[in-house]
Image 1 (spheres, rainbow, N blue to C red):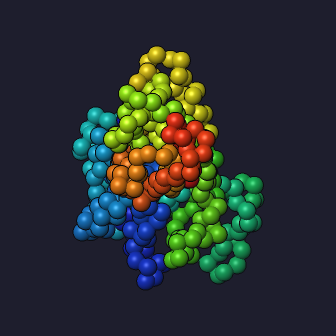
Image 2 (cartoon, helix red, strand yellow; image 1 turned 180 degrees about the vertical axis):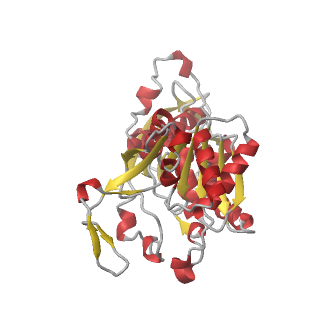
Image 3 (cartoon, rainbow, N blue to C red; image 1 turned 45 degrees about the horizontal axis):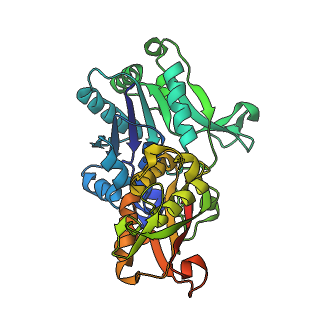
Length: 406
């Protein structure tokens, strides 16, 4: 199934005041725009992404995406077509422009298209997957949350025209998902008739003859999937999260540890870097004690298991295995669950050789394996002052604490 994403970012952001265009403002390790795109790429494989931008705004949009190192590493792994589409004088016209370009580039494509406000960076993996599967099965899908306040329809003279039943009212969110072919037909018909609708579900419902009368199905939304509209919707300038933002991020701490004997005739490996030494780690794999501790910390934080269950030492296929390859496999699975790395803090205990001359190279190596910034990784070394097996030079031990968020 072909799967397309339209990210709408062609608006003027007038309600942000002096802060500027909201989709390009800093958020986390990137921007509002890059965080939104990253959420979708972590959730499902997409055939192509179309970003609607203001006239002449492609360069600014590219810059807003390029500042996100995690997104950069994600895109490097995927053969993904990202196009920037000049928006129209309304949201609906911008989406129409994106659909016409999509049809031109992928004339035989079917499948599903998701339309998402780029200013909703906190969309969850569950919402994305629910919208995809529901649109695929029923034609159209939209996430919604029940109304909390009692709703009224207001007349032009500022009086209540109608009392609405709250249990029948819901606030819809994005992404809104649609089977591609009928959705394009609906937008083309609305464009021909010069009609302007408030959202894409209304476009779909206005032309039952083009959709075989299929209604839009509701999937469960989430209050965290809020749209950034005002400056108060963003994290504070001091870098701490606002009250709303703190409710939107799940964070977990993981801890890993590993211990190996040191023997002659083995390589001394730390974080994928071979350091000259008289002895090296003894183990079933290459015995890189630091990478093993990091692997265990990531598995613990994400709740996916531990290194022993992932790579049983009794299994011969892991004999002399490259620990960097094992860590990459685990990190790929962790990221598939929607987690991103905030930071790693590691301690390695051994007597010899001196670590300080090698520290930055080890940090750079770990960061490269995880495809994150070296600012997110730190490694320090301690001796055991001649005590126990580590202090006697018979063993090496590593500890790692990690912080993940999604």
